[in-house]
Image (cartoon, rainbow, N blue to C red; front, side, top):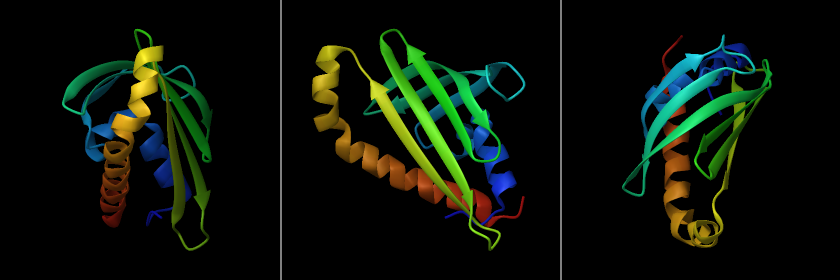
Length: 138
C-alpha cells in the first residue's frame, strides 16, 4: 500500500527512469526514446546476484492509471514487468508488481532455485523503497 493518490503513483512508477530512486538493483535507467507511453524505450543497467546486466526495455502496455507493462531484453533473456494500480478510496494506492523471466533453457532450469530467496528479498526492498518515496508529499 502506498500513501499517494492513484494518478501520482501511476505517473511516477510508469516512468521507468524513476527505478533509479526505488529499485535497489538498478545502477542506471535512462529513457532512450518515446513520450512515456507505449513504445517508450529505456536502457537499464542492474546488478543481481553479483552480476551486472543490461536490458533494453520497452513500454508495451500503458493504460493510465491502472496498468503498465514493460519488456526488457538482452540477447536471449526477456524480463516482463507488469504493474497494476488500484485506488483505495482513502488517498492511497495498492500496487501489484509481477516480474516474469524467460531465460535460455539451461539458465531457466537453474534460475528458479538459485534466485528464489534473493528475488523475495529484492521484492521486500522494492516495497520499502516505494513506501519511502511516497511517505514524502509529491
